[in-house]
Structures are given as structure tokens and as C-alpha cells.
Amino acid sequence: MVETWTALPAGGAYMPELRTSSDRGVTSIARALSSMLRDVGIDLDVRPSEGATLLADLARGRFELTYLQSPDVVEPH
Image (cartoon, rainbow, N blue to C red):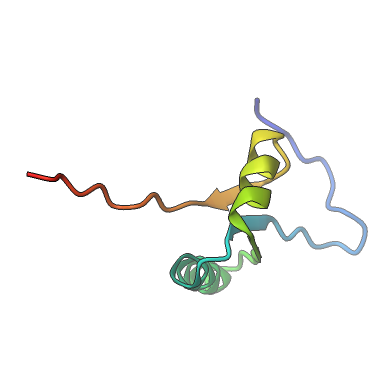
């Protein structure tokens, strides 16, 4: 589904929310991404959440953007 914005919210600025886990490394990457996008005029509101809360919100569609990192899979052989 594609949403079309016809007007900015009250106050005139739209700042999308980037949801991520509260893991320090993941949060650091999300904030670095936000900083790089700010350099080109896009502001992101980075919102770290505890893992279970984040996954529940994602399953219910309560997010605009998300950054997730899956654990490395190590083969036993």
C-alpha cells in the first residue's frame, strides 16, 4: 500500500519515526543513519525499544520505518 501525503502535519514539519531495538550497536547504527540523512535534509526520530515490545509493535503495523539486525548464524562444522 502506498500512502500519499497531501499536506504536512500541524507545525509544518514531518519527521518519520525509525523504530529499532535497544541493543547498543543497533541503536548506534540507526543514529548514524539518521545523522547521514539529516545532512541531506531528512530528519528521523530514532526510537529504540525493548525487543519484545518492538516485535509486537511491528506485528501490529505500528511503525513507519524500522532497522533490525538478525544474529549471525554460526555453522557448527
